[in-house]
Each structure stands twice: as structure tokens, then as C-alpha cells.
Amino acid sequence: MSPRAGTAGTSWVVSADRLIDGTGGAVVDDPVVLVEDGRIVAVHQGRLPDGAERPGTRVLDLAGCTLLPGLTDAHVHLNLPGDGSEFETWSRESDGVFVAAADHAARIALEAGITTLRDTGSRGSTVFDLRRAAELGRGRIPRLLVCGHPLTISGGHGWPLGGEVDGVEGVRTAVRQLKKAGADWIKVIGSGGGTKGTLVHRPAFTRAELRAIADEAHRLELKVTTHTVCTESLEDALEAGVDGIEHGLFLVDFEHQEYSPRVAERLAAAGIPVTSTLVVGHDVVRSVDAIDKPDAEQRLQRDRWDRMLGDTLDQFGRMRSLGVPFIAGTDAGWRFTEFDSLPDELWLMTEGGMSAVEAVHAASGLAADVLGFADEAGRVVPGLAADLVAVAGDPLGDLRRLRDVEMVMQAGKLRVDRGARGTRSGGAR
Image 1 (cartoon, rainbow, N blue to C red):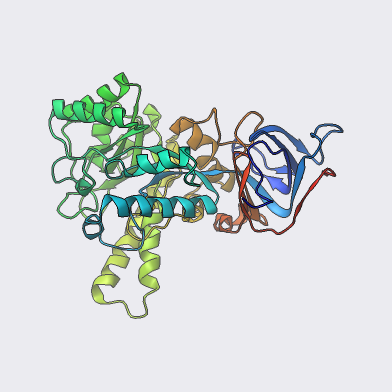
Image 2: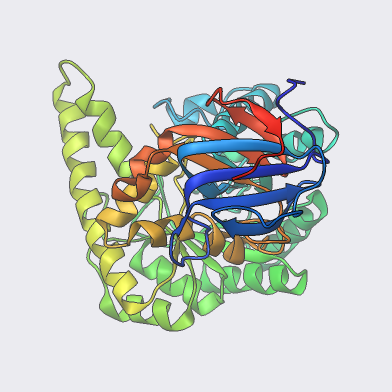
């Protein structure tokens, strides 16, 4: 271990130019955060009161930086590469490759200041195994909330991950098996998606099957989130009483959306949170723009995704105005979306009308509330785990600057420290 890394038992005084604390409230200038035994003990402004720190406390002076809570990406697929590989081809790799890919992806996320991930679809025990290895001290990764394989109809979106199931009794059994495996959430594929041969504009499960999934999950004290990319699948999810919506699109065919105010108003009234995943289309456009001489098919794909992104941003703003809550998720691993893409997602949320502070809240305090770990992390407040991130300068003018990570602390342990400022005992400002 690096002599700078510290342990969960190390006391720290962490200072910076400003703090976005993850509560959605005002930005604090000149924050000083006291950390003891891996947890936040106090947050002060300007300096610590005399005698507040333990003897031997180490000081981390992050002058010129903004401090934030460790961020949350609420929608990733750790098994997948995020490099444009065809899903059906990549899915032929072994479970061993999938575990190694998941470890690699999780490390990238942690180094980007993402200290919590929800994996919303993986094969078999691969991501459960990764989490267990980290619990045994054999991995340095973010906090993981795991769905296991997504439940999908036979031949449905994501079927190569192994979650095909049909019929009311079949889906109830599948939920019980995921509970036994240690799933934190149940992920349901409520409509077609990017898997070949599926219908994005049609729902997948029957309403009876979807209701049975939600009923069984709730009986076992699990929550359900549903992939929905067409209007009818949104209505089905509302009728079933699910706890979350992934994507929340209004596709009527493979490339066109028709926003439904009626369904959006129902969603707002239900208070069901939506995970944004705006960056997927942005990354497809970016990847084609990086090609020197794209062919006709690539140009068509770029134009399709660019148009869909514009529609999705417009719908995002309209749903927000109704009061639909959004949390931040990237769909990292899918198509061209990489595991350090959360800053682009948050920037896109501001392009859709959120303030920068609101967008950070969607990837910190609000995400912790929705995903169920708010008593552990998600905000820079006393009593919670010392998951802290520092980025250079002030990112509030452009959240893409969250890529400029200088420091990552996870439960009081330094995971990234690029500032080369040195630490010392005493003398906190």
C-alpha cells in the first residue's frame, strides 16, 4: 500500500475551494471535511474549530479543486466492453472473460470518481463473484448493487445473458432464484431493445407476467426496475407497480418517438424515478464523427441516433417539468458507452434543463435515496461513509469537467491522488 493511501482507520482533514455536497442545496465555499475511521465526522467552512482533530490527523489540501460525494452510476453492464462490439458476438465469451471484463470496468469507474455502481444486467454469477472477491479483499472496486441476469421473454432483449423466462409461475420462480443469488434489485426487460430480432416499439412480457414479477419481488422485499423504450411498456410498468424505469422512451418504431403527455403525467403522479441514459445516443454520434470516412450505413446510424437524442432530451425536459424524478445512469458497456462517461451524462442532463447542482444530486444524494443506500453514502454529511471526489477547478459551468479527477476517497481510503500535494499532520486551515 502507498504511504499516502491510508486505511479506513486514518483520520483526515480534507479541504478544497468549494463543496457540492450531494444534498441538492447551495454550494459551500472553503469547506473542511473531517474524516475518522472511514466516516465523515464533521463538515466546516473556513477552518476546523480548535481541538477538533485527533493527534496525527493527516491533511489533504485540495486547493483549486471542487469536492463532491463519490458519484453513482445507476445503470451499467459490467460484463460488456463499451467499445462498439456487437452484443451477440461478445456474449459468446466465457464467464471467466466476463468476470475479468467486469473487474476492469469497475476499476475504470472508481478512478473516475464513481464510488457506487448498479449493474442492471449481467450473466450468471459473474458480477456477484466480483463483488464477493472485493468483500474478501481481492479487488478494489466501487460499491456494487447487483441485479444479476435481467428477466426477459424467450428471445427477448438481453437473452444471451441467460435470463429468459415465460409465464406467471416461471417469472415468480425466477425472482426467487435471483433473491437466493443475492440480487439487490430485479431488472426486467419490459420491451424490445438493441438485441437483434427484438421489437423496440412493442412490450415484451404480458401485464399478468409483469404484475407477477413486481408482486413476487415486493413480497421478498426486493425492488423492480424495468427497461421501457415504448409507450405501451411504460403503461405496463405503471400498471404493475414497479419501483423504477430505465430509459423511459416513447418509441413507435425503430427510430421515431411520439411523446405521450398522458403517460408522462401518470408517471409523474406515481413518483416513479427514471434512470436517464442520455449518453448512449451521444456516444454513438461521437463514435461515427471520429471516423475519417464513414460509409453510408454509418452516416445513417449517426443521423438516426442524433435525431433520437434530440427527441429524448426534449422529452426529458418535458417530464421533468411535470415532476418526474430522474437519477443518473449511463448504460455503460452497451454500444460505445464507456465506464467513465458519467460526466457526459450529467452534462446532457443540464442540456435537458437541469441545473448543474441538480444533475450532481441525481448522481449522488437522490441516487442513494432511490437505490437504497442513503444511510451509508451519497452525501457529504456527518455519519456517512467518507466517499469523496475532488475535481480540478469549478465544474458547475460545464459538468464535463468532472472528468478532471484529482482525488478519490472511498470509505476513508485514498484510491486516487493525482495532485502530488503531499499530506502532513496538523495545521488544517
